[in-house]
Image: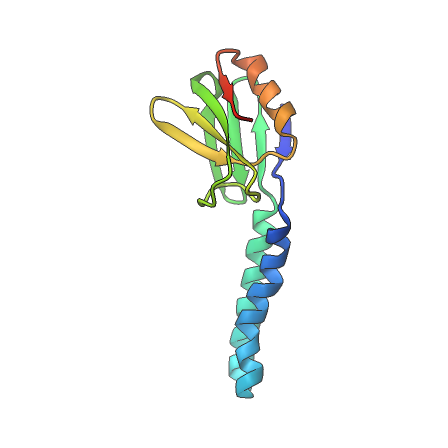
Length: 138
């Protein structure tokens, strides 16, 4: 079993302070009462909690499955069903913390975008299990 962490872009680290600033700044402008500050505090804790949960994103390869784990969400893909892997820099939502993604095509019509930190090792590991995978533009 091999575990690969997600590559994390710098935008991700800037997103949390910006989000917190946008959330809390209006309270300063409005000289908000204590109740509003309590709500902002709870919101800030939730935002920080979500970021911590997202940082646990990892991709696990065992002898049969590629498992994508992010906190409470898990997706299992049979490696033998993977048809193609190609580079993708889309901003679409996916279990990836970087824009430098790879798209994995599996089954007949399914695909998923991920961003393993060690992309070449990750792909080589998948190819060891399923040499039939077509790798393009990586």
